Each structure stands twice: as structure tokens, then as C-alpha cells.
Image (cartoon, rainbow, N blue to C red; front, side, top):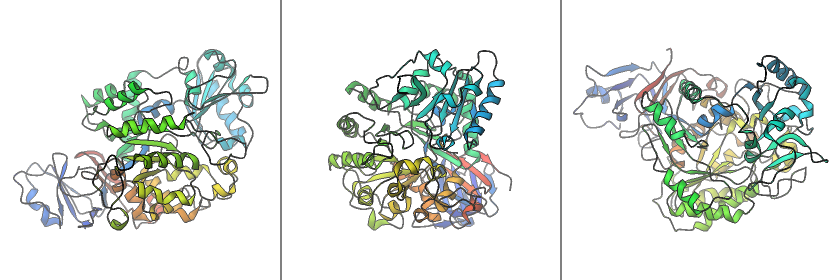
Length: 564
């Protein structure tokens, strides 16, 4: 096995009685792991870790649980999300009557003059009708309301809210965004993309700093209880986030390791790009700034996904960056400084442009090639800076683009649980908007893996729930776990159990350049570990979706201990 030499010191923790899936191709299975100073000290059979045991060592018998590298959410918004997910959760609303009932109940509970905030509203509630405040105004009882739709890129606001923000007609933005107006130029209350929604920021009540801190810690504790040890955070929306995280670490440990990628928006100049480069120096014990997040388009439902051909409403033919060449320039500027980039690209034209941008970099920034366990032939001799760039979401993409991911060393980042917003019969808002042909190539997870791409999996919380067991299960089922009556969406794109686990472990590490210290259970690697009551590779996926989490460990610290 891969046991380390006889130790000069004793381990802090020894985990025994486990089925260990190391994801280390040299030693794929083990029974016990020793941890010292936040790192894995030894891996092997029981006898291989015996010499690491001392009087102060905590020995934990996992009683047959399966121990894996720590599960990582490859795309999440825990810090920004505690403000996004504020107010009434509307994710259970299935039709307009249900929405109006929920809003009316929330409005009655408001104090005089209070704002109604809500989130998680599914576009399918409107059954194809335009999103319009007239549909909800009488249910609000005159309250100002700000309601986020589930995609996070749009909102529905009431007339009182528009008045409070001084919005009386259309606006022009540097990025692709809009205040939707009717034929007479009156705002409908539908705000599309961040710049439009931000018009309400000065007037919407915000949580206090103490409330944000408390809610963030509660959220991270919940994530750890579900088995997460890390998250790739696709924003750093507020400038005070480093201060917030530093303040938390002054008193405790972050339960989940956070890697943040601040946004780069259209209109950025050289000073702005250099500031993003400067931010890469910021780090704490369990957090760091690592990369920059771009948007090449918006969402299908909002009509802002960049498509090669217009959607059924004649929209979707423009990029989020009005000048796509400016995006390419910004990515190249960051790449020359060695900064990793992640680009939100949902439509096929957006995906193509990101791949074109990376291809133009050529071999200017070489880095050593990396091989993947069990698939080395597909992952060698890749051009350029391997996996320095990644694409987020990739909801629809033609076959001719798939092989470019592996050839260019671009990681694919996808969210299996997003398929819950679509239907196998294509009667949902997303499918109707893109049309049958593009809906038939939705979320091509398996095709990307078979083409040799690195595929990291995540949730995009709060767009979908952060539970990694649901992510793993849905990646295999192409429907929600525990709901066999729901037809799977593009079932041919299902991953194997091992592929799904790699998406939350070894491939997640590759996508951020941490493959030399994370994503496997081997001596010297970080002690980020997850123990589940079932084997996530071989257990039925429906069972995996709710399997007990026996232990979660981040950096050698136990962040969750379940009941055996």
C-alpha cells in the first residue's frame, strides 16, 4: 500500500474500518488513513497506520463507511448567495395560483412599510406568458417586492419597488441587460441581468454584517453536514468578503474550504484587470482568491444566452460583452499574469467564443501536462496552460465543439441538478425557448467525458441545492434522486458512479490546479475527506441521494460527525 515511513511523531487522527476509495491509481483502495497537521500522513491497511498511533491520537472507527477524497462543489455562491436567498423561498411554486397564494401570505406577515423579498421562482410558473408585475400586484397588498427568479439573472419587482428605485422607463447598460418595458415604454417589472437588478440595490433592505456572518456560518455548517469540504466560489461580489472571512478565521475554522473568483464585467480597463490580478494574493487558512469569473452570456429563459441561431422569440444572438473581442483581450491579459479564468457560457455561440479565445493563446503559457487516473492516453501532450481556463454551465453545445475541450485543456464545469428545471418531453420554458434540436443536446456531461474533457460538477447554489449527494445521484440518473416517476432528461448523458465522484474530487482539483495536493487520498495531500454510509460509486443512485454522512473533515478538522 502507500504507507509512509515510520513516523517521528504521532498522528492527530486515525480513521479505521473504512472502505477507502483513494482515487490514487497506484493504490485505489485502502482501509485506514492517518492525519497529521492537516495533511494525510499514511494510507493503507490497519497495520500500515498502527505506528502513527499515540496517546493523543483520536482513533475513529468508520464501521464500514466509504471514505473518499473530500467532496467539492465545483460552482457555488455561498457568500453572495446568503443575500440572494433572502426572504420567501418560492421554489415549490408550480403555477401562478400557487405563486400568488405564497406572496399574499408573505405580504400579510410584513410589518408596516416592509419590503417583500423572495427567491427561487421558476420561470415555468408563468406557463409561457410574459413575466409581468400585473400578474402579482394585487396579491402584494401594495408592498414593495423584489423577487429573484431561480436563474439568478433576472427578477420580478412590483410597482412600488420600481417607484422607490426611480425606474420609469428603459435604461442603457454597458453589459447586456434590460429593464423590460411594454409597448408604451412602461416597465413591466421584469429586470434581466445583474446591471438591471442592481438598480434596486440602494433601496432594498440588506442584512447587517453580523447577520451575514451568522447566516454564512450556518450555511457552511449545513454544507459540511452534507459532506462538502470545499467550494469553488464563482463570485466575490462584495469588496468586504476578504475582511468577512478573515474575521471568521480569527475566531474559528471555516467548515468548508472556499476558493473565490471575483467577477470581471464589460467595460473593465487595464487598471481594473490589474486590480483583479492583485486580488489573487489574498488568502486565509481555508480560503483564497483563485481566478476570475467572466460572463459570456446570460440565461436561456431570459433570452440572454448567446446562441448561434436565435431562440423561438428571435432573441439570443448577442453576447453579454457587447464587444466579444474585449472579452478575449481581458482573458489574455489575465492569462499573461498566470491568472485562471472561469467563464459562464450557456449557449453554443458563447461556448465557441470562449474556446476560440483560449485557442488564440496558443503555447504562450506552457505548463506541465497532467494525466488522469485511468485515462492517461487522452490527457497528455495538451497545448498551452493546462486547465488554467474553464467554462461554466455549457447547457447546449454541438458535437463539433466537444473535442476542443480536451485538445485545448479547457475544463468543463457543469451542474447536473439544473436538469430539474427542464422536462424530458421539452414542454418546459428552457426547452421551448431553444427548440427541439438544441434541447436534444442539453447538458452533455457524458459526451464531454467521453471526449476526454476534465468535468467538474457543482450545484450553483442557491440556483439549486448544494447537497453533493444530490449532485452525484442526479449526474447518474438525469432526474432528481428519489423521484423515479420523473422521466430523465437526455438519459444518454448519464455519468457512471466513478465519473460522478471524480467530478466532485479529482477533476475538481484539476480544474483549479490543485491536483498535487487535493482530489486524492495519498500521503502529503490535504486531509479533506468525506465518509458516506454507502459507496458513492456502486450504491443505487436513488439511495445515494439521501445516504447518511458519517464524517466530514476539512484540513484535518472534523466539521461534521454523523451517527453510526
